[in-house]
Image (cartoon, rainbow, N blue to C red; front, top):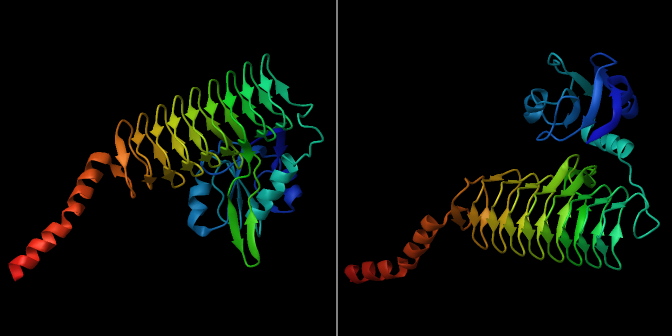
Length: 313
């Protein structure tokens, strides 16, 4: 998430009431998660295991819960609870704004786009030309939809990320200040849910077609001309490259990459990153030919045991 204007380190520190290490006028341009940070961004870290990764990332401002040596060219914000303070910044720079109409006045809707009854179009939403939005679709604030997009009934674009920190009294949610971006010529089926990014974008690439009842987690990037069949669940921070096919009831773990033109057969659990141009099946995922050979061998086990018992007799 980029801020609407440049801020200083001192200004940011005053918002969260924290100490800072670095020049008071050090420039701050935005805030992001570790996998999408750029120079000028704030990243937060609250566990020693990830200190080095955060400090050596592209982020130039690190919100951290311990005073450490500050890398050259960077700045630190010292907090007793970086998770909490990251939420404070999200609330400050992208606060929730309630709506009093089905289609917000700030929404921009292109020529010849049709929006059927009972849809909700939130604040600062942008919808391109020649789109068809069927009834009971909810498009949350700041969503961007390109041209020639079809979205079927009951789909929700922009719900919060499923991202929590366990506290003694329950779970504390990391607030979502990101967006959903749907590129041109995308088709989205009925009852799909596409979560917005925590600070970045959840993106569906041009020409991709998504079947009914598919879930896409926060900050996931789906490439161009992909096919995703029904009841597939894609976790957060997944990268799916161009022309990938995911058949029905595929599930993925978070933070993995699926290479271009990969085909994943139905009911596969994608537990790790996989290369493009191959066909996969099973849980844990393997190339389909190898997995099918294993299943064929398993079927022979009763026959082998029977022969062993006969030999013993």
